[in-house]
Image (cartoon, rainbow, N blue to C red; front, side, top):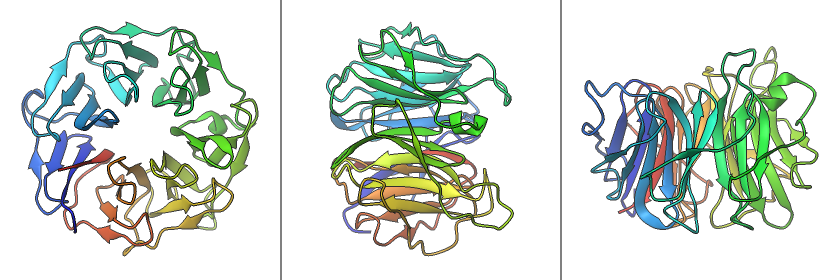
Length: 330
């Protein structure tokens, strides 16, 4: 793989692994994560203000690294002991960090993680699947005081004042699973859209979340109720290009990566070198090189593209359950 880079994967049960050489070898992160390092890492967020800084959300707290994941420090926070499902660093202020949890809540720090406040979003406390989760937090690239939040299973929320107050947006559809938000993105390209990945497909809104339109993907098996979608990522180099993890179900038996290059009008499945062993869960990109994409199946496979998704390579090493993936420049 040309131009070596650092890969980070967050697992359920094995903590974080880091590869400094594009996946050729891997190191398991130990301290300061508590022994026996069997942590649940469900979120990895790169800092758009610092190419070598990454934040990790776990079931034992929130951690940060300033050296590509080599060394980590724990931030004291009210999230200790909760599952942290989403983390975002503000693109205009590296001291502002958002984090979302199960039990459902959204938190904000304005001093780099030294102190935290829970924000007053009226998120449902229960749903048919138990407690909802804040699965996605996105700072709008057009206006940084606008924040978007996706909740599993309670739909999309928007704040227009940096998180101080929140509005629960219109339902995405009639089915309860249409409110099961796995990931949110803002595609500010030829036509601005808010996009949300759900079990039924990708919803898009061209009127700031007031109404939604569903794009469904081909089913993998005739008896599948839908074509399941998970993480959606807008390219930092081209907002009309987006990637979404897709599969038959969760965790499922197979999957693919869907790509659009025209703002969601049309999609195509990636030419992966093998059939994935489960749903493609997450897709990671970095502003340092918009042509490089990393993606993972939930059952431990890693795929890399260096040509904006035209071709893909499967990394030899496989893991257990991967819930988050990211890459950083060396």
